[in-house]
Length: 312
Image (cartoon, rainbow, N blue to C red; front, side, top):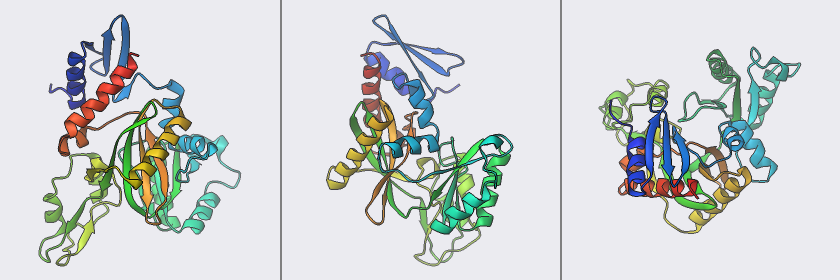
């Protein structure tokens, strides 16, 4: 079986740092040992964050509540519980009054599972009917709850890498798109993008008319989402005024959440405002490392610093 890219990088780092590495639990657990100390890494989760905090960060609504309570700018979330699983948390008048109210205030809503990643199951809804279909679909998949958010007009989404009060990297994400030639269908144009072989890609494509032939010069976004797993392209943000603003917000969020090692996704809206969108306790960077020039060494250095911090 081919070794995972992430595991290969971690083993390389540990060899350089004279750390013993063992694979346990069918390769799910990496056990690191040095100078009588033992630490663990599982599925991009480093043995460095408090357990309770890691659990909070894995929950989109809980993250919103914690950041909001400490006045950190964060995109608004409203929790909708699955009545068949958490009926005791559903209001007497049901869930739809809340959804109608949010839709009337914001005209477009983003419906998302409360505890998934890589953009899976997220839908942009323009009507109550679309919201109902999206929410019911998630409930049918046994999601215990969903979050609904206003649609923010995002100029760029940024990912920040945060370690113990320091921001080590910020990169922006450009949504995948094609430019029409007046002859080729979306199927052919999208094939030329060589999108990642990820479930989110097919989910995104299912919302498009793949037989459509864009006009000459017409730009068609393959997805409204910014996930690298869906084909978005990363670009390292250079130091400057915007970098400093994003860095400052990331540090606020990391401190408020009591996280030691995390990635923090921050949106820059078209009206020049910044909000935390979500945080991730699993620090995954495979696509960045494999697609950005020098990306492998950048991510390797970040992981090296995180492993060093684990043993301090």
